[in-house]
Image 1 (cartoon, rainbow, N blue to C red):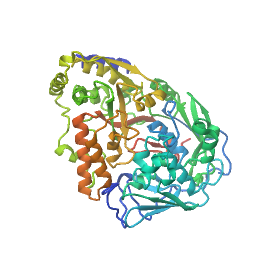
Image 2: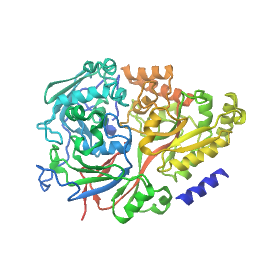
Image 3: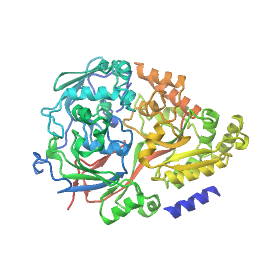
Image 4: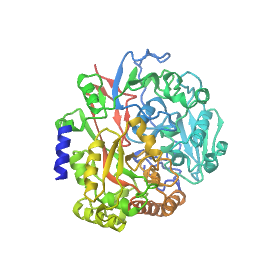
Amino acid sequence: MKKKVIALMLAAAMVVGVTACGGGSDTTTPAADSGDAASETTEGEEAPADDTAADSTAPAASGSGKVLSVQIGPNPETIDPALNSAVDGGNMILHTFECLLTVDQEGKLAPGQAESWETSEDGLTWTFHLRDGLKWSDGSALTANDFVYSWRRVCDPMVAAPYAETVLGMVEGYADAIGGNLEALGVEAPDDKTLVVHLTQPCSYFGSLAAFATLSPVQQATIDANGDGWAVAADTYVCNGSFYISEWVPGSYIMCTKNPNYWNADAIKLDAIKFNLIEDPNASYSAYQTGEVLFIKDVPTEEIPSLEGNAEFHVEPIIGTYYLSLNTEREPFNDPKVRKALSLAIDREYVAGTLMQGTYSAASNFMGPGWIDTDGSQFIDNANGGKPYIDTANHEANVEEAKQLLADAGYPDGAGFPAITYSTNDAGYHKVVAEYLQQAWAEIGVELQVDIVEWASFTPMRRNGDYDASRNGWVGDYSDPSNMLDLLYSSNGNNDGKFNNAEYDAAMDTSRTTLDAAERSAALHKAEDILMNEAACVPVAYYNDFWLQSSKIQNMWHSAYGYWYFMYADIAE
């Protein structure tokens, strides 16, 4: 009955890094799958220059000329590269900043601010050679020392960058730097065009990290002058990417104008990109229908049946998992039996197939398709002896096990179990999933209240642990499994559930330091075994991205990591 009720409500509402960090580095042949190349002495292909592009010596008037109007989300929590951990903010940063390396349309590493790079024979030293004449959006010179400053800033405990350990934990001196001795970090600039990075152990996917937004260069002068406020206003947001912010009206739009000081400005055909900050999917859809915007990420879920077969409606897989975080620092979520009971009570096939209308896939594991094992195979195929951790096709048996686990935890039929709150933002399927959880958990005797939180407040609330249970999710930044498994490491800044397990940490430590590919694979799989056995989080579905895109947009692309690349796009007349 509960499924019919929810369905009616919905209708009504409607690189493979061979051994990765800790592994050996091949010094003659770069890996090239899924953008995780360790690319040695590489000169990659660049976007072609456009001889017909507008003069790039002066900025275009804000919002004038050829403007691509899009919607990828509401007000971002932050667009400070060091602090962002959300896809919408990452999409904006992608267009305003550029790292040493970039990811091309084929998902392979390509030159960015660095025109070439190489690794030492032992894999411990990475050297990046910057392009001539790099500039910030304000016209001042950008040098290798700007990267030294920016990477040290990521380690600064006063900044508290959530990705710090993930992106720099393998660099020499990281432990001292994160403790406040920033100069201990093993990053140096022997001259203005050369950046040298010293690692504690080989990391074959470090090239992917060098292309990751957290390690974008940021200008020290604007941060020194404006403090934390540098990244919240157009006039202080100095950047180095293909576009710069020319206007910012909170709650309305962020206008990004072509950056004439970008090294490849001649290849940029658009004069501006207007990021419309719309939180309501119905408002986004209305703007798309009227032609006010040509692209929307947030499509109303009730419209999806009518959009099937529409050439402008796109559905593509990405590497990531929609999951729930349970605050393990609060009772009763500190008991793994309780966490596992709540997990098993969820009918994942129903959630993915009915509530999410087949746009997502039911998650039997935490690590879904697309993550690459150390031997080049799919990580999921080698997990749990080749069997799913959760039999998503046998929901009735799962519910009976959930009831038994809850009884074993001291709450037979939910007796004595406190009322709990589930926090989520109201976008996509989040609200209807929350309403389903109320019914699913009621079936095992658990009373659930739903708290709808504005997006700008939602992620800091979750990161601070100010919740009982919460919607969560992760889209891969690169295809090495450590990228998502690191989330549950006790000291990771993105460990929203505050999971703390010494055996789990030890497995991840082994995966970071071993030089043996098989041992590293075994350690990563052991970590997932522990995660699933302890119900450190609750995987629900594997992500797909779905969006509406006008046929007028040309030469943009979507990556498996959940990003849309508009910078080289054009608009057909």
